[in-house]
Image 1: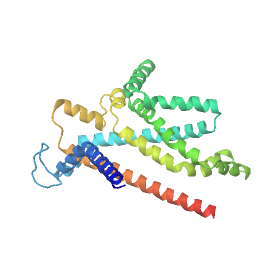
Image 2: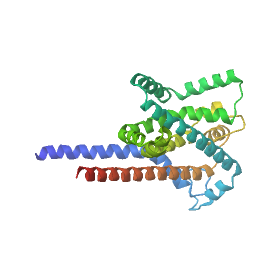
Image 3: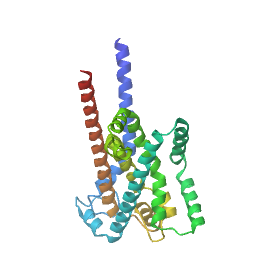
Length: 277
């Protein structure tokens, strides 16, 4: 018995060591960037004292601010469109016949398992055939193609978990299908819709391949701007501050999403217990 407990303890220790090592490999470079965003040295590794000057320089740098605004505009617009299309697609597929549902679900897997370079090049060929003009619209279309399948896969589980009798009861009480959709189905799947929007937003925010192939020549997002700067000269030190802000923003989104999921789980557990009584 003692020997079995020792083996279990050793396995637990090695499991924690493995987790810590992987976490360090993943997050140590980010933590180094965050640390050196609070010093005004041009190179990482040289500490000139604690200061917020990099953040002040970041917000005074008009070029970086323009690129950040471009990135946010593309991410917001494409995420809204992808969320609408992905949600409607999930609802329509969920209510379709079994054979049609399987075919559509198979098609939604293609953008996820396929290489981004293949999808980006296929869109380039399509737009060249249509006229060869690359503008803001072609860039948004590319980001929607990239993210809409992820929205679909995020919303679909919510539809599966939803009680179908709620929609049927609304129709029996005289509600029109469109009204029942807005008042019954959408509130039930709203957490999945929000999660799909946040996922599509983050995917669009850091995409490089679609952006590089489909953007107009003078238009840059963060990914293409950083790539262009690195190819010519050293990375501006202000970008360390920008990296820190983006990381904290993503961390806050993750925390809010986890808190919302926990509250929802507690709410459902409470109602389940109340209903069983």
